[in-house]
Length: 423
Ligand code: PMP
Image (cartoon, rainbow, N blue to C red):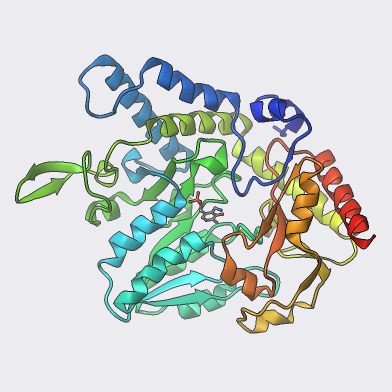
């Protein structure tokens, strides 16, 4: 089935309330279809109550909806058991959970392998472990903005306890072969973690095929409400791990002297949970499934194809991402300006070599005046900005409700911005 953005747009009230809005910042967060908003609102209007606690009807029904959502998420990402799905706030919280729980077992001199293209969410939680003498290493990115797999392999060694890598870069759009990376990790006895914040919303993702130990993503980037996210972990690993947050719900039995823990996944779900978020996520998965994740991916691929074709007609544009559509999700980061050749990649640098003839923030503000929402800045990936030799970029990231005419409008407005600034 092919995606029909014009038709889909009608499902999203935000477009009715903002006529003419061209929303191209979907890597930051996506809009919500009426079915998701309705699911959340219905929950509040019909069975709102705390889950796993009440022995009365509406609490049992709320619990059923919450646990159904877990089953749906499990199926959606190819996990064999809903117990492997932990509900958290977002990808950031999932990676913090892993850094805290797995980090407690590491010894001074142990290594964590990341890549040069990580979001701050997959950097900072690991930085905390430096205090305990843990060493962080980075697999390099190549000049074509793809990961250097050989370098990743060479950096895996007997001390590498954990490797955590993004599936799709939120800046470059690069799709990493996480199956291959997980395989390398497993052969080395290294725990593998996939940051799937930019992949689960955009393409079929199957954890059993990838073979990773853990995988994290956020609901708000896939049509669901904010504040609900998912950590997938192999059941035996989750069982071995200590809990993260302590409190109600996550316990077995408590005395004044101590406590036992609940079974997984509830051991990791301390306190009152985001029930409405989980219910909204379930509705979002229904919506995405009705389109089909292959169709979502194909649509984004054709959007990117269109972008790359027009891009060649724009003077002085420098884009940051692989040109091979098979290696790239629907994210397009670029700058307009005095762009230097990509020789900076040979040195890890934090010097910013590109002077922009249009600053990304100026461009974003200009486009906002035309009702076009794009992202500008460092995209929570400051080390990567340094690596590609810029302080910031502009970024567009289309989704299922965007069409080619919006991309054309975006490029026309880019030319208009340039003319306005040259005047
Ligand atoms: N990883 C990547 C690749 C992302 O793009 C983002 C969000 N921009 C995150 C992690 C963090 O997601 P969240 O803010 O939902 O925790």
